Image 1 (cartoon, rainbow, N blue to C red):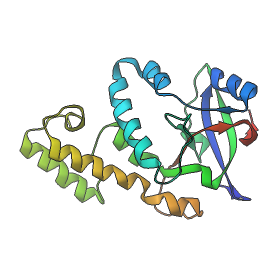
Image 2: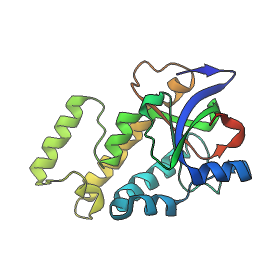
Image 3: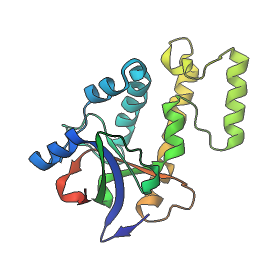
Image 4: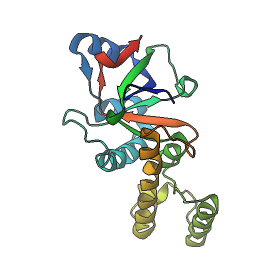
Length: 193
């Protein structure tokens, strides 16, 4: 991860609509409706994960009221997914404007899965789910049948932020694939389009 002058170099794939808005207004904020529209029938999974993220991430970097959901950015351009109607933005983001985490932990949340302290902890939790007769781990979050397990899973998600301070200080020994959340994208951050 490249840090210079209290800024971090990040890459983010954004639709041409976002790029046009940045060019016109100088800043852009993500909205829940965009996520729902993008993910259609699987939107409830993303809304559950994103809504949890929004509430917890406020403890690390306060978002402006206009930002309903974050934008995603990556320290490694190879982790950025690009689509036909999108542009990869190279951003110089002030260190204090981003929330940092390991992308693999975020994928666990998107699968509505438990984030263990260790691989053994995760295996132990999976065995417990089997003992309860839970076939799909996501059912713990998406249904109301397992309130205690739901609390345990959501509590485990707080481990997503375990690397935040170290990454912010340029120490990312344990985080393999660094991802960042941005409450906004500012035109002044764009290094190249």
